[in-house]
Length: 485
Image 1: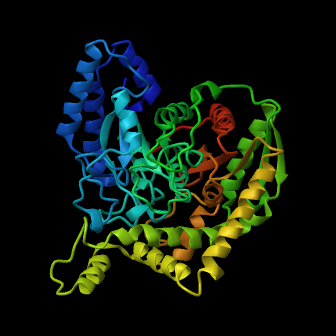
Image 2: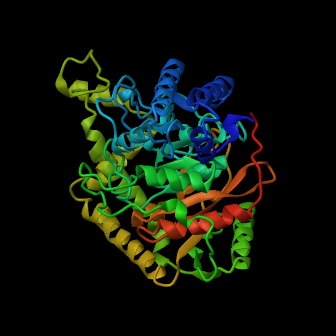
């Protein structure tokens, strides 16, 4: 039996039965990382000794008779924009390449109560800006299915580490699809919760009204359990929702007969690859056979979602990233003779091209004379998109679409064409603008042996419906991973 092939819940059962130790799990995953990490580049920070030391501590904790929770001893990779006390949190940027966080994010505190095994800090697009994980100051992350292809972004490292069996599961962040899109391209499960369901305290901000932390796993059950572990109200996050956390695992493997599924025609656009569309339609037919009612629905304002996002997100990024000025923390140009020169050179040298591009777009949109024409108008259209979703959920339990218009593309193919790159998130962005939950899970494999993802979208705080349908799809779609490594 190979421990790395087991899901988190399966490892949990073996730990409870005292059939394996956490140290044995750690040893198996460290060996796997040693074998494939040079090819994948999924981690920015990884320390064998730290992993083994933590594993021994957890084994002692278990031996002393303490409670074993869902993620006690389970290896989890953390995206490197989530603060971890005493460990580097770089955001994959030269600007923070030596920054060591002085506190733990709320999600880390919650997982620490489980005594989880942090396997490392995962690579990402710089400051979470990108759809391919080619924008990291620590090098490109490669897709385990095809090393010439991107893993998606910005959570490409967390997704690739799970797909390559370097960790049991991981945490990513999703601003416009950055959990779901790499999950789709890497053939795993990625869940973006309702905005405010999981605390953002300790997540380095990109676009504060859009960012959300969520799980990346190899199955829906692990996603449900990991969401349950990290969800809940947090007084340190002013946008946190003060409501009870359900038992998400209880919604799995339930009857979906009579559930109503809407297919937004605005998300089944001509740019969707024919193989992607075919796999999604096959999954929909399976759901119909299970008793679900599937109908086409129109959300007319979704066609403006991409334009709205690329006004709002860069505007918020411009504001959030103004703190990186070389004065308080992070990279500083030390050869400047004036404070103005220091600001300019620090930001010019510390930020990569994509981050600079978005800061400039955002600054322009927020500038005097253009605020009303761009940012204010984008906020108004965002409200129209939210209202479209509200109207649709009066009739339907969930909405379904492809996650990504295409399968994983070759590294470098879109690097010089930002507009084509931005279209990678056309199906996922509306969900962030509306603040609603969605999950991506595998629904097929292309002729070129690349995974295809399907997206299930729910109403606010209706992760239960999302998980019910996702579980039904997972049980019907039979496939297996066929990695290049």
